Amino acid sequence: MHQFVKKPGRIIFRWAYPYLIRYKILRSVLEEFVAIAGGCPKGKDPFEWVQNRRFRRLYWDVLLKHRLPLAVEFEMNSLCNRRCSYCPNVHQARPKGFLDLSLYKKLIDELALYKYRGYIIPNFYGEPLLDERIDQFVQYARKVLPSSIILINTNADFLSVDRFYQLVEAGVDIFLISQHDPTPSAAIQELSRLIDKHPNLGEKINIVNWTSASRVLSSRGGLIDDDRIAYMSKTGCFRSRRATLTFDGDLIICCEDFLAEYIYGNINDQDFIQLWKLSLSHRREIFLGNYTEPICRTCAGLSPLLSERETSIRRSGEQVRVVGC
Image (cartoon, rainbow, N blue to C red):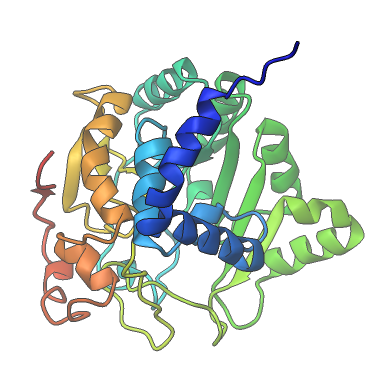
């Protein structure tokens, strides 16, 4: 005669269910999933859009605590041929420098040990196509990290159609092209015609008009003043999940830190993964909206935009180690 046996999982759920309802955790989770299903843009990480702090804490502690960064952004070179009003380099250029090729290979090789599948982005505030080594950098990343997504941010001033195909052949997956003039440049117009002729290339080329009145801008940690600025969410910042490296190997707080003032450490002295893990407790607080650093508070609109920082952009850039690292 068959005898019904209660499953342990069912017993645990029945015991935990009243407590989940009591503390509204289950309700919060369901509400956020509904919000995600209805409002998360295609291709975006849905958890960048979760606003409930309780759920964000649970998500980080359960799923993100031991994960690699969503993207690894590194300053291959610090040079840029433009001076845009919505970029800090309109006031002061980044120190001139180039990421050493051997240090870059060390970084990529280390990521390969962990079978990294995230984004590889070879720029900070510089124009990557000004660096003649770009093909070599892309080819190495594609060879060693075959499952990664290589994305290039560029103003396209040096991106002809032939150059586009060369870089695609080298291994670039996506070109994020910034239009900095009201009228598209000749290069952008040529690439637009290429997309019209070959619609499938639209998956590789994304053109963003930064001069548009509807374009939302960041204050770059308080260094830029523009009517189109939208402040970071006070419930947490998704940039905490991305790693940003300067040309000299510093792992900094995020891509908004133009002056590289907030440093976790340097990959010349420590392994990248080791530094990343050391920074996670601090990044968790940023992810949850516990903004203690001045740059974060300014970026979230909790501190004045330029009043305390407008003079710092003209100084040499005193480096400040992040608290708790």
